[in-house]
Amino acid sequence: MKLLTCILAKHIKSASSRWVWRGCRLFVCLMFACLMFASCIDEDLSRCGVNYSVEYVVRQDMHAVLQDEIDRELTSSAEQLVGARLDEELSGVYSDIAHDLDLSFFDNHQLSLHQNVIVDASSARLTVYMQRADYRNLALANLAQEPTVTLDGASSDTGMAVNNLPADTIDSHVTGLFSARMDMAVDNTNQTFRADLYMLNSTAAIVINDQGLMPTDVKAYVCDMAAGFAVNDSTYSFDRSPVVRTRSFTESGHHCLYATAMPSRDYSPDGNIWRMKVYVTMDGKVTESILTVGEPLRAGDVKIIKAKLNPDGSISTDEPEVGVSVTLDWKPGGSHDVEM
Image 1: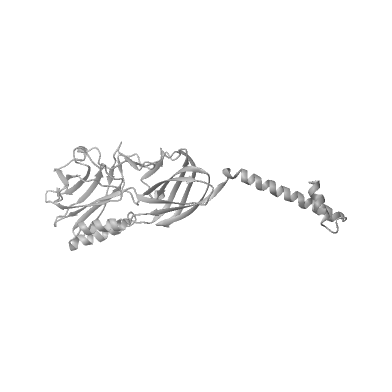
Image 2: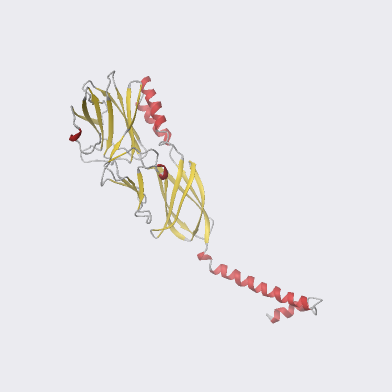
């Protein structure tokens, strides 16, 4: 320190001035302090955090999925009016707009960072400040909009699951739910990550041609759908299978009943994968028609079943993958899993 101070003093004409001498000493001290501080930054860089750019994108045109099924199944002039109404009813479900994003970042399976943001868009680019690590990022969209599900086990990536409310009979979902998962090897450089959001629920609907009959009441329930969704593995659980109430409307001589829920199994040993139970009240009697479907209802799909109402209150359909069993003069006590 003294040597460097002396060298600097020889190059200053007014070195004999006391204030110049003190200024030189202060300058040298500041130089050494800066060098020491820079060295500390270099040594501690591995423990510093960095801002990272993460983009989330809804990859499917969900409205196109709905419209394709409507155009394929509902072809007559009266059915097209039903289809237009169904399209309107499901506009909040089959949309590529994510209202909210629930974001969790896990390090060694434990939650390291959690954020919840409102985006109201089909894509969103966010800046996230994190320290260097190998993260597992799990993302959910529209969870805050859906009152019929809960998020459980959120402290661990392996335990995080979206579950239906614990009830035997639940309401239809009111929005489309989306999920994404992504590994993020984060270092201390500027990086951009991208995750694709895919729909995790689906919709079943039945359009019944009343054929001029005047039923007092028509109700329907969707059965055999998943009860929960493991976010990390993108798998569904069927340990319990709630009955899902449908929503309904009438249009142009047709009853339309629909429900949005988690999807069905991909297969069943007996070929009967999922069911829709229809209850028609006519002349003071209730007729139960159970429609059994042999094709899976997968995540993001829409299935419309066209059917006819018969004079005895039963439902029939010409669709080859759908079987129907009928119970005339059905009594509510005869079925334990349907609330009338």
